[in-house]
Length: 331
Ligand SMILES: Nc1ncnc2c1ncn2[C@@H]1O[C@H](COP(=O)(O)OP(=O)(O)O)[C@@H](O)[C@H]1O
Ligand SMILES: *[C@@H]1O[C@H](CO)[C@@H](O)[C@H](O)[C@H]1NC(C)=O
Ligand SMILES: *[C@@H]1O[C@H](CO)[C@@H](O)[C@H](O)[C@H]1NC(C)=O
Image 1: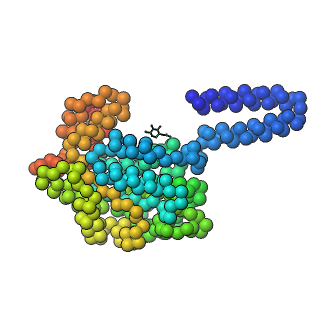
Image 2: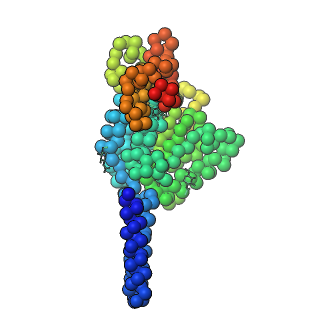
Image 3: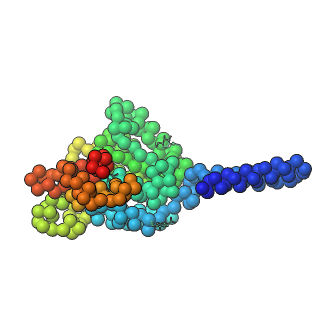
């Protein structure tokens, strides 16, 4: 709507200036000058640029989104809101924000990254300043490590040079080659500048399943003890998580000195999801499709999901991941 209106005004403006310019060369110059300025303003209005109009953090927005849209992740919600708000309200951060999200598949790690992006960039995940890398998609061949590494470094450098408030999401971090992770380490550190570029306003988000099993074990222990899920606190998970993560020789992330050097600012655990959360996901999905949310359909969908441990059926094996396609079948 706004766009159409602007085009019309621009058109009228240009027609008028052509009319005027037929008479007076000085007026022509002035009018064309104004026209150019106006043109640039309109261009910036319509095209995303690295300016506050397009990049403005909304803390309330993130808080509301986490409360309303993210189910069953009270610890992750709290840490993420605090971390992102603290970072974004600091005009002069000493290092980029580095978040490492851990947990079972389908528990909301990608989803939370999306919520963060939507409350920083007007264009959300479609923003030109948000970059997602998936190990198996972008860096599939170990033999090409050196090529990937220099390419990734060029990308990070190029994009942060364009816009300091860039966001980089690395999915499947546990499948990334340790050499590649070593390659991005310098950008996460406390450097004032590297080759004349400051990385301190950038955000890096690492997603992985590393430590997922130890998080599940803790959640299961709480469940077996008849304790409320919301009673689980970060410190209940921390020891287990760091043990699992340090002892996992397979995952590249932990081979490198990301942890030793304290380059990761926050480790964020994602709990496995229960039946009631799957119901919530199904209800949200119906709403998103413009359907009237139907509790009994949602429960049917949730019934159809596989749970573990087999005997007790406590946690969804795939989290909320397959709900979308299951809903096609029921609704
Ligand atoms: N905790 C959650 N709350 C709300 N929706 C969720 C949650 N976890 C997963 N989902 C839904 O399931 C989809 C897949 O989850 P995703 O975030 O990709 O999982 P992963 O943890 O593997 O990154 C999301 O797009 C979202 O719609
Ligand atoms: C921030 O988010 C809140 C809650 O979603 C919304 O009401 C408000 O309009 C947003 N503010 C801006 C400046 O977009
Ligand atoms: C920014 O990153 C993207 C990958 O997300 C890459 O294709 C692009 O070339 C990078 N831009 C610069 C200027 O390096």
